Image 1 (cartoon, helix red, strand yellow):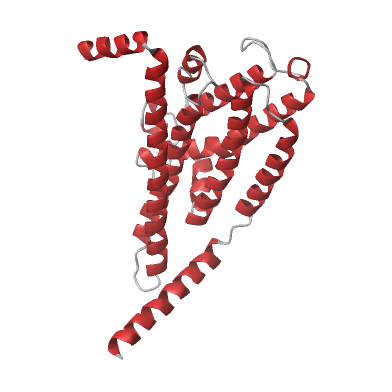
Image 2 (image 1 turned 90 degrees about the horizontal axis):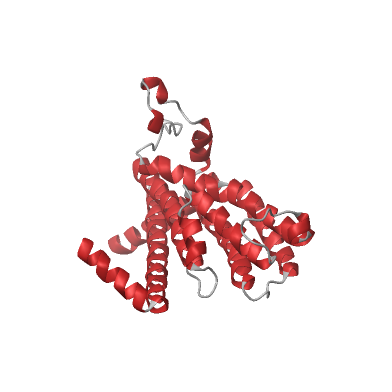
Length: 276
């Protein structure tokens, strides 16, 4: 490993731009593959829901539902890598600040903070407020922070539950400070999240996170060139609110009935054609 490390360091020192370009492409390829994985699992979940009209395969539905929601958080992480390595947006020093944060949520928040402060022409160490950024940019900054905490953070939090085998009874994150069995206390918030978890919920959540990530990306890309048009945020804000409203009014049971009915009709027709 030491020899490999020396060779990598040598390549980086000789031509850092070229090396960074390779890493950028690796992250892009990973992100693309994660997107393919999301679509594949979504397809399997849809089939499981449809065929449950004839078979008692609720375990399959639960399995693919958990995998689908977990993959969404993987998508969030892969998307962050793409953002951080967007060409001419973040410096290596800024990347180190982002990557040395303790959690994925904090990395997203730090990437946003750096992008906004660069856009507002203030140093990262300076406080972000109405005076330093201006009221419009500061308001945008605070709104996106709320979106990250309210919509991206739960996806990350529940990924950790699913990845650690807590599919039905999720626990509080206190196992790193385990004392005795009382450390395993049920996380009521994750229980509520799991109750809402479904193919429709994750589908609409993907659309919402795409909008939020796009907003951060626009600020980050514009930060080095002062091209970000704050007026365009009005449209982003409307789209986010519209998507949140769709999520809050999901009728999963109606979707299941429609999907099963369609599957049953196709199945019965195929049987009829075969026997006829």
